[in-house]
Image 1 (cartoon, rainbow, N blue to C red):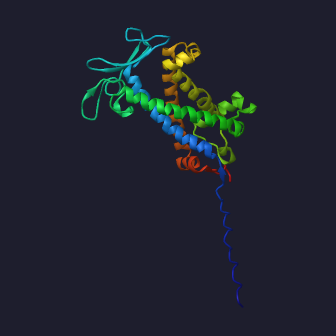
Image 2: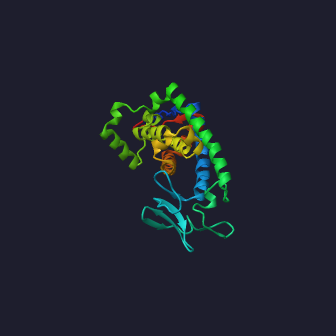
Image 3: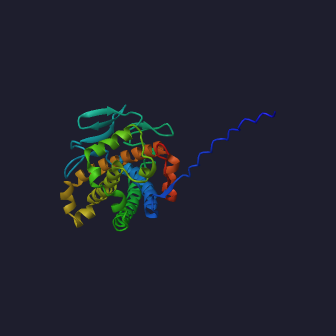
Length: 285
């Protein structure tokens, strides 16, 4: 008698392959402005540091000169470099105030040559670079702000909705960022509250502040628009605000780069080049 063959176990059905979902996240004007602005701000920062080297002291009010008390200064003694903020003095030998250039020569400019444009001291050239790229920043920002308002970018992507103003909602986003928990799925295609507030602060506060304080420092603009001096409390106060705003932009840049690296640099950079963003699957998908 022939024994029946044991039933053959059929292989489990292969799980369906998940096709990555892509969304068109950044439109062309946003991508162009992003990269042009990044290059422009880098040149403005480095040429601005060259201009600062001509008088590395900051004051509040209408006037400021060497005998006056500066609230911020970068300087050097015969042996050391230092930064002074108010009455607090920090030794910065080898970094700021007194440092050694590539040829082994000690220099006493406030900021080293590798951080400035041009790399050798030239106030005139620093001003040319700075003023030329300041116009690129001003024109580009104006056009981008107009497109943001007219094209719907402000309403669709940057508008902070009522529910997002909730302290609980904001605190939840802060905790998620601190724990490096980034949104997945469709939520990753939208700006969260911290991104919205950061971008609004940069586009509508810090960059316009840089432009108008820069105009206030110009004697020609001071004659044409004297009200700028009243708004910012004098040319020296405008210079101090200009300096502080510049370093706030630098801080934003470093936080922005850190978030890009942590969230996935390939996907993030690709989306700012092509516009297309790949969504990460949500938990359980």
